[in-house]
Image 1 (cartoon, rainbow, N blue to C red):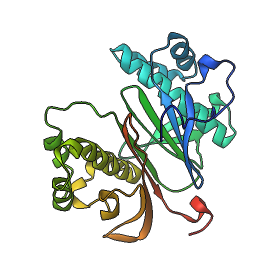
Image 2: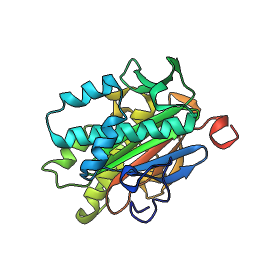
Image 3: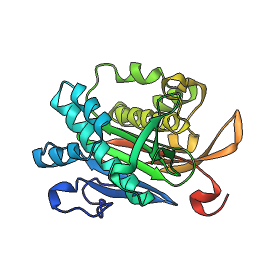
Length: 253
């Protein structure tokens, strides 16, 4: 997948080209993944900020850096447009609540809405994943030089993942580290448990470690729930999508 060649169309209708900074980049079953362009653009940022509600405006104001303000405005405004399009509701009627572990959920007119979503951003790239049912997680990481990338990622890796990683030549190690990192973060985000989940308690499926782009996954302690893992990485960033497989997801259980 390329962030430039695979973006295909706006998620919603926009009144000008400048307003449309998000594009569908991946679809699987009832789930859609949207790429958000976080490049600086004053016109887009002003328009995005105007779409936020009062609470979001206050949250945006608290960010000190222009980059963080831009990131929040563009991602949240795109999320609003995507969720409104999915639910057929007006922007003014949409708000967001937070779960016990801090994962947001949508409210329309104060009532929890039948939509599942997750968001991630890194550098100039954002990804938003939306589905009509089931839990969902997405993660994106721009591959940047890191003084201790292996040491950082080892805090989330199992012995199996560490052994698998050791088989790769030095030239490929960083690529594989980012790949494992995004897969595990997406799993954690799909579960909605944030930093409370110990990522060293489970391994990414061997098939994914060996290079497969997608596979099914089950937690050993909860084998009745099936998950779909997808590697969405490209030449610009590492990324992963995780979906809970429900009857609604693919029209079958």
